[in-house]
Length: 162
Image 1 (tube, one colour):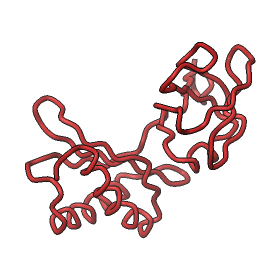
Image 2 (spheres, helix red, strand yellow):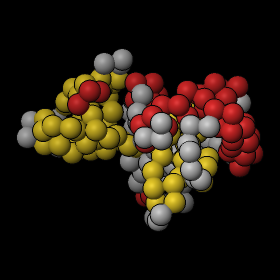
Image 3 (cartoon, helix red, strand yellow):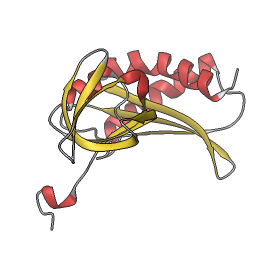
Image 4 (cartoon, rainbow, N blue to C red):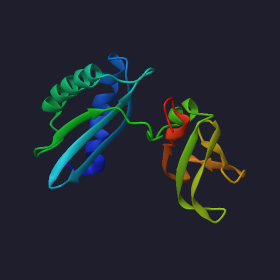
């Protein structure tokens, strides 16, 4: 049962309602081996950002649920944190929430001869997104072609940036 995809599936199913009850959004779940140890990483968010108390509350609730369900037959570290300033965009709702923001997208196959794009997210619906690239080209990318997408953080655009 401990295949990475299966663990992510089970943990997502357990974590989603727990996060919602705490007023949090489950952004992503990762399960991988790092430096010889297995790590189960849970990323959460909420308007205004997550606090240490939010992370602790979900960690405790999810830890109890994982003890009951027991989807991982070996030791692992459970980490709960915010997704960071370059948060991943995984679900249609993530793309819709960040329309107007700069994003970096990698595709599974070349689109117009490229697999990596950076630009402003112009629109998003349940099927895909529209991107205006830094070169000024507008592209419609269906989610099924997107391998990875993240927000782009530019230090100079933040308050106190240089």
